[in-house]
Every structure is written in structure tokens, then in C-alpha cells.
Length: 147
Image 1 (cartoon, rainbow, N blue to C red):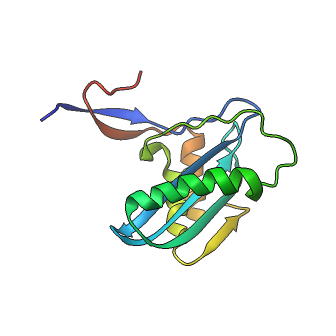
Image 2 (cartoon, rainbow, N blue to C red):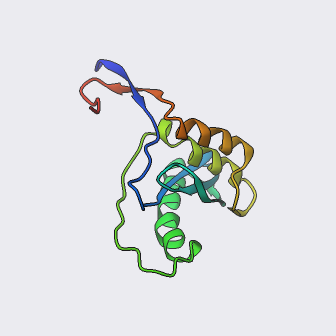
């Protein structure tokens, strides 16, 4: 058995003049009712928009893949309705402890498709924690620590 260690992780804002999209998929069972959600924030962590969408019955892997596909195809292309070209896109994985807002929005996807112009109250609480730089702990295999 490999040795484990705890690391601190937190949500990190995007660079100045960038927007950051965090997304997550979830399944209540494997398979079970599935959906996904996500949100867009600016460089100081302010809410821009959010979404949640049910996908029916799926495995946890299928729910995660759906969230990534929908984020890429729908959110960037049409949901935002950006009139100018998007010059640069960077896709990067983050631990779920640094993705709590998107995880919470995924739980709002139980019965349909929603676009949120304001964050739901549970997500607003998490946004405040993220903006304050609140760290969360995650167990990782020793040697996987990020400096």
C-alpha cells in the first residue's frame, strides 16, 4: 500500500481579463440519475453565469464525460453568446475540493435544464469561500504533492 499525505487545495482565479469555467458531472448511483453543472467566474471570483442540466440515467464516468462535452460544445459556442472570437482556451483538471461550486450546481440538475443568472444560495456560500482563498484538504499518494 502506498503512503498517503494530505495536501491543501483551493480554487484559483484566472489571469486578469480571462474568465474561468468550472464544470462537474455527477451520478446518484452507478448507474443512476445523472447530470452536470458549471459556472463562469471572472478574475476576482465574481459569478458571471451558471448552468445545470439533467442527462437521465448514466454511470459516473458518463456523467463526467457529458459535463466536459457540454462545456466545450455548448457553453463556449452558444450558451455564452459571446460576439467576439475566443482567442485562447486552456483546459486544466482540478481536484473536486477546488471545484465545489460546480459540484453543487451539478446537484441542481435533478429535473431539467437551468441557466442561472444569479447563484443559488448554497453556491453563493461556496463562492465566498473560494474568493477568500479558503483551502480544503485532499488525500493523495505520496509523491503526487503539487508545489
